[in-house]
Amino acid sequence: MSDDLLPPPDTEVKPHSMTEALALPTGAKQLTLWGDVWRKLKRDKRFYVAAFLIAIFVLMAIAPFLFLTKDPNACPISDSTLPMSKQHWFGTDILGCDYYSRVIYGARTSLEVGLIVSSLSIVIALSFGAAAGYFGGWVDTVISRWADIWFSIPTILGALLVLTLFNGGGPVLVSLVIVMFAWPDMTRLVRSTVISGKSRGYVRAARTMGSRGRRILRRHVLPNGIAPVLVFAAYVVGSSVGAEAGLTFLGVGLRLPTISWGLQLAVADTRFPEDAYLMFWPSLFLCLLIGAFILLGESLRDAMDPKLFGGDG
Amino acid sequence: MSKRYLIRRLLLVVPVLLGTILIVFALVFLTPGDPVNRLAGNKPLAPSTYNEIRTRYHLDQPFVVQYFYYLDGLAHGDLGATFTGRDVTDILKERFPVTLKLTLGAFAIEVVLGLLLAVVAAVKRRTLLDSAILVFTLFMITVPVIVLGFVLQYVFGVKLHWLPVAGIRDGPSSYILPSLTLGLGLAASLGRLARSNVLDNMAGEHIRAAIARGLPRRRVVGRHVLKNSLVPIVTILGLDFAYLMGGAVITETIFNLPGLGYSLITGIKTQNGPLVVGLVTLSAIIFVFTNLFVDLLCARIDPRISYE
Image (cartoon, rainbow over all chains, first blue to last red; front, side, top):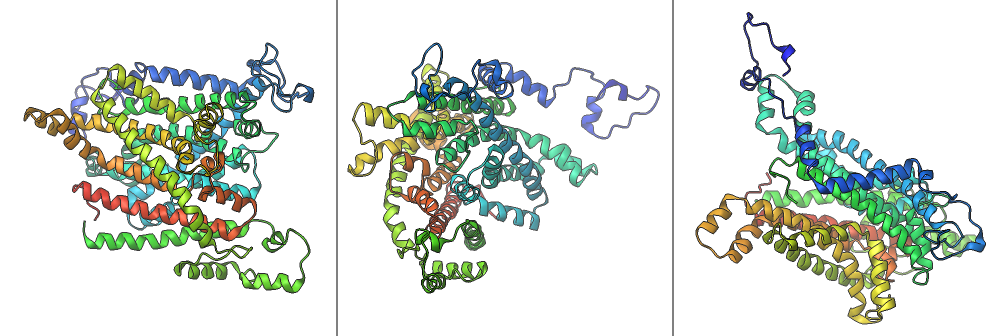
């Protein structure tokens, strides 16, 4: 409650509820949910590591030229599989391309897949999962059974099948196919969060006060249930980056000329173990990217969990 | 847990499985290319032979009819035959033990290592040991299966010659590296999850009461804390088990293990529709029933869970 909402002193104050009546005159700095989360995050070392790594990868994705001087597509075949040198920091790949440039460019593809899968999963989960949990009844039955069906097909197996139909594709297609089989996870999470949220005291209070339906869902249930969704979203970024690399490695994911760590690993596999460095660099970057999002998820989880005091490791 | 709940859960399995099979069947049906021509190596076939093969496998029937033929066969334990005349059921029977051994190996690593790490970290909370476990598990979760597989293969197979590099010709030792590849990551995520769960429970009043009653620490952790952490742990273990049984495609490919995942890849590459449908159907069946079992088990463990 901000001060300008205070009525002039001579009019009668009619607070809508007990809490409002108590909150009105204080004027102390309010601790909002997000302010509290931010305060805890600022004390968490994991959050800084994650933020630093993610910032670097985002920069790599948006402006790869900041990191390199060579064209990743300039590949003189005479330079095939050169070892590491001042010229080629990570050596060169089979076709003679500068491996460092190729690996840097791979960040964009992986990040693209991770973010598309994660944000689409959120959208689906917040609409279908919330509807199923809030309305219950036949809405819940239809959505939940539909989710069960897709949930019972392992993501990699299903994506393998569908991508074979398309004979591989670009990052957007691969992301959509991963979402096709990965969405039920988060939808189930949101559904159960909404179910447990809707019987809470403050929701019952809001209903008693005459709020209903969508307003309760939007104003009370979802904001309080958003924490697990965000944490899971960070995890989904990491896992879908891994899934893309795996699918591409199996030969059904991304295709050249896309530059991707999965493709680099697939090529490296054919030269393994003679040219092990071809395996090393994309693996390292893949691990760092996935690790950054896992750390982000964990620090968010601890910061948003009201049960934990003082941020436990 | 009432009998009504059990029956309702069993009935719910039916539409889910029908839907799953329908989706998989449709996806394989949509695959471009004529399977009969493919079988003949894309060489011309006599029209009579061509038509006979089409009729024998009901390929001349519309999609829905083919689907019902398949369900009918499935109900009799018959998953059809590949276009080369082998029974899919036979192939699955042959591949299943490989995946089962891999699953059991990985699962054992997950359970033993995961729970050990969790309990040690929770009991030694905020010590150096706890931090070391947290860093180690984070690292193991971060490394994708595809990377870990190659590293283990390179270090222990190629460089040190301690363990077989690939294939299953060396008996049980062939399964050690693949099981580690799958199991370490799973153990790490289970360990982290179980640790925070154990910590949550240790803060509970019933634990303080148990300590106040003078019970030995070992007993408090073993009986009071772990039992209360069991539901989320069992749930995760169930999902992981089903995921492993579905065929670890990437691991089986890296280590050339002729299991379910490996045959899925070959089936897809050779457009062996019946085999692919059979494999994914099997993994969905395992998944659905594992989940059912886990739900029932959780209701057993924690009487507070009521499914009405």
